[in-house]
Amino acid sequence: MRKSSIAKRSIVFKDKKTSVSLEDEFWNALKEIAGKRAVHISDLVAAIDEQRGHANLSSALRLFVLDYYQRPAPHGR
Image (tube, rainbow, N blue to C red):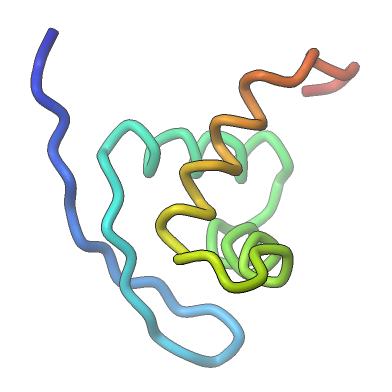
């Protein structure tokens, strides 16, 4: 098993630039989910940000990806 690298990535959403530290696998999963939903990754991150409460954004993104892949697949996923 290879060691996962964590990279700091900049993203602009809600007219602000922020950075998140995510492993490549989580970043790639977010891009895949955004593609399946036909939305920009910045729009997906903005939606996750609105739901996260006080949690760290990087953690909220990881939990979103985990939840997405653990849920039973609805039609059209």
